[in-house]
Every structure is written in C-alpha cells, then in structure tokens.
Image (cartoon, rainbow, N blue to C red; front, side, top):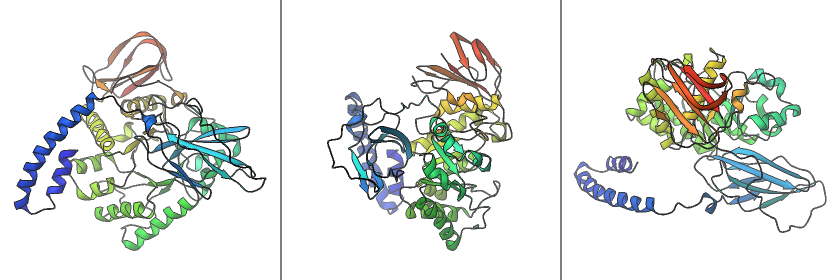
Length: 450
C-alpha cells in the first residue's frame, strides 16, 4: 500500500524530480517498516477504546467512524422496551415512538468497538420526561455477531412483496442483515423491518445510457429520492466496463463519473456496484484509471451468480484468481456480496457458494440465495460457525479449508479430483446431514458444524 501511494505521487511530478523522490521514498519506507515492526510487538489497542461518537439532529442520528467495516449496531431503549438493529453506514432516522423519550447507543458491528455515548430523542405525543443518567448497555445486549455467522443480503424483488407486512418483521430481523429493494415499492422496507435498505437502479437498462451529464444527474436524483425515504444507499446494476460484457451504461469514463456523482451527492451512502468479475478484475490488475476512480467511492461489490455454474469460474486457476480479486477489494475497504445463482437453484450450489463465502468473509461481506422467503428458506443460512481460527488455506490437490471455533468449511476447486475428508468427530451440514467423513467432487462445498 505504501509503495503504491509513492508510485501514485511520483506520476504527478516532473521526471527530473522523480528519482529524488523515489530515493527518499525508499529510505522513508525502510524507516516506516522498522516502525511497523516495533508497533507489531506492542500490545494491540482494544477496539473498545475507540467507540463511535453519536450525535442527534432532530430525529436523525449520525456518528463517527469505528471498526473496520461499515456496519453498526444501534440499540434503542425506553421504559419496557430494548431493541437492537443493524445499520449500514453512519446515519439513520429511527422509527418514531410517539410520547416516548428513547435513548440510543451505537457501536461497530462484530464486536469491534464498545458502545458509544448515549443520545436521547423525545418524540411528540406524550409528556416529556426530564433527562436522567443513562446506564450504558452491557456488552451482552443485542445479538452477538461474528465472522462465522451468515450476513444475508435479501434481494427483495417482486417475489417478496407478499411478505412486506408487520407479520414478518421478527423473521426479517432474525434472518436478514441488508435488503436490496426496488423503489418505490421497497420504500416500505426502509421503515417496516428496521433494517438497512439499498435501492436498485440500473443505468444500462433504464434509458440513462450512455450516461452523459444529464443522464447522470437523473440517476443521482433517483438516489437522493431514495435517501429521503430512509434508504441507506444504492445498488448500481450492470456496471460493466468492456464491450464483451453487455449491458453496460458506458463509456467507462462516464460510468466512473456516475459513481463519483453519487458519492458527491450522498457522501454517507452505501454504494454497492455490480460489475462482472471477469470484466473488472483484469482491468484492476492492469491499473485501469476509470475502474480505480470508481473503486475509490464504492463500498461493496456484487459477485453475481456467486461461484455457481453461471459464474463461469470453471478452473482451479480462476477460483484462485477470484480469491485474489476479493483480497484486492478487501485491501481497498470494499466488501463483497456472494449472490445466488438463479439458474442453479439447488442445495449443492448454495452450499458451495456459502462455503466459499466463509472462506473469504472478513466480517462485512454478505451472501444471498435465489428467491428465499419465510416459507421457503434454506436452513443452511442459519449456520453459526463461531470465531474463525485462521485464514483460508489451500491443501493438497485443490482442497480448501477454513476452521472456526464451532465448525469448518471445505471446498474443492474446479477441475480437481474428488476429495474424501475424514473428520475428527461427527459433524452436521445442511446438505450432508450428520457425517464423520464425506467425499466432495470439484465445485462442491461443505459447511460443517460441531
């Protein structure tokens, strides 16, 4: 990262000055590396030492950055009621509670910080109580979150419309972390479920291509409308860069301008961009300026079709390259959503995709399936593997593994021979049931608890 910053800086000065800068930069980088080595030996600071700072403006809450992801837990409390919700981003307008003085705290999700300071909002409709001394919530309040738990990003297309009622609020809060909605119908989700919602907008297919300034302005107005209705951000679909990956709103410079314009108009918005992996990854490796510009503004990337048959990841080399791609996004602070494959809507594909998700998850990544509903929910998405014990590892012959305190995941990369795995104890899987050994073919996975 340091070397890349020096390289970027050098490109903006005359050639005659670059050698001097580079020479000094090398000496400085040696010093920095030495300091980093010293810091690495020092005790790590506790995440609880840097909680976010919470503010209220009217009925809207904002807070400072904390933790390594963009996901936070908001706790609200008033007499007889304590609730916890997940927020993506650093601002929210909680549902009003008429006649109540509600106290709020926020903290970085996945136990990456302590709770913030308390902020109270008194809602009209009842007698205003004088402020009192607020006890901070205990660390046990609200659900615990770890990398070993599924963070499900619901794709609330029209199939989910019948479940947009109060009857399914508890179900949604227990199963969903983020909602991709389709405005204006999805306006209801922004208030009904108490979950963060991003609004779907496709510039390539909605008449806004080729994204001249007027088309960009029209797209940004749609995003601003969503934000006024309680959305936390936008899902930019079909953000493809090359002619071989239609549809695309192109040209690439205009697509980069669109992402820049969204960020300028909504600085706190969550921007999820759906670019095809086989399109954007070669451009990232080549240092494409338009792609780099867009990625400076993006918070999340979609891996459309996950690693299902429609994803086109059909060789071991490509599977390994995909991990390099995800690692490169994570280095930029960008999370990823492992989407389901609608053309292979079956348990083996979902288990392979979920196992791959657990191989890459760093706490802020998401996964989803195709057309999952309260009445047709794959129980594999309920899994809790506990705390990761180490990063993913590639074993002999294309077998991948990541171990957790409460389980383990395996995948066999495309093109590899079948692998028989003997487990130390009986474990269970949504696909494989209770097993003490199992055989996985290429492009199969197992998420095992026990």
